[in-house]
Image (cartoon, rainbow, N blue to C red; front, side):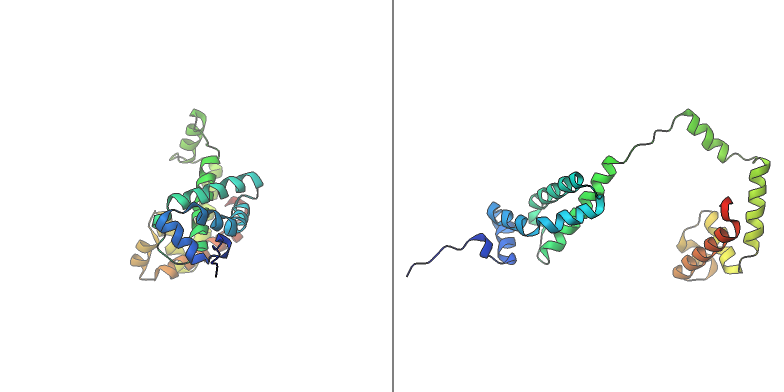
Length: 186
């Protein structure tokens, strides 16, 4: 009786992952690549909506996965690959996003925006904002005032005696109401 050698296509996912993690078997990796390449590509394409960027991110995902193979400690290998793909896409996006240099005119404009003496138009907007805020329910108004002062959700919750979720809700509802009432100025 002759025993036929198994082809990698016949191996289970667990066997392939074990072979990859324990011995670095490139044939196991190649088979895992064949099995999951399309899913990872589709995830990357959904992120970028551009074929070439999705292809680059897919390739880098598998390269990172191979380099980090010892860090895979069981579980769903595809889910692990998809997490690597998501991080790879975010890293690509960060590298490709345009840098906006701040030149002298931008700095002057920023200083003018926060200048202590607002012009008449700005003062009118601030006055209208304050009038509309005064009309909000007490908890929404108080949460918005504290947030404007720079407090975190947790700090606002402590100061008002509300839960963090309630603070978030009051802030969201207050902002929505102000947007509706103030329209174009906000």
